[in-house]
Image (cartoon, rainbow, N blue to C red; front, side, top):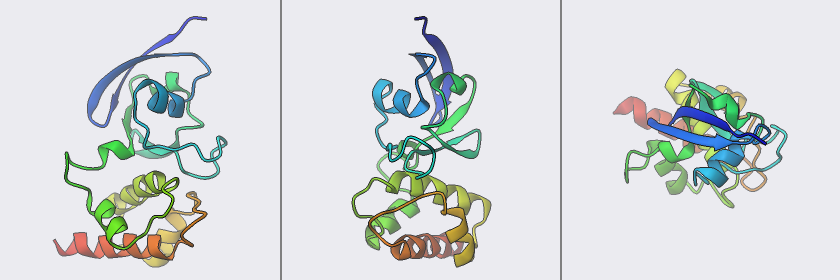
Length: 158
């Protein structure tokens, strides 16, 4: 079977890879490119564990084919920090213990970052609505919501 040659940008870096026609973007990220931050929780786009940004929009990497990345700009959890400096959301998630097992955390962080880039002063209802596509089986969401709200306030103050 012929492989697709894909040229794309991932986390602000030009990337080329070969993938099978049926291979998902999640499989490409994890297995071919070594970007293992995005997790597979359901494989059907229901849990948000594999959330990435594609051309500025949230997407489930498990529902996107690797070949669809051609010419696109993709952001993953690995691109969230600036070198060794964690993004304020990442710091706040650690400080406020807004993570437990870590399966949902990458997708929640990518989605929360997208929210704060669009709306730096969200209400709690807006945060809950925005993160509704990200399922967490461990935390009960309160610490996640609080960490996002606190990060938003902190970023507005700076």
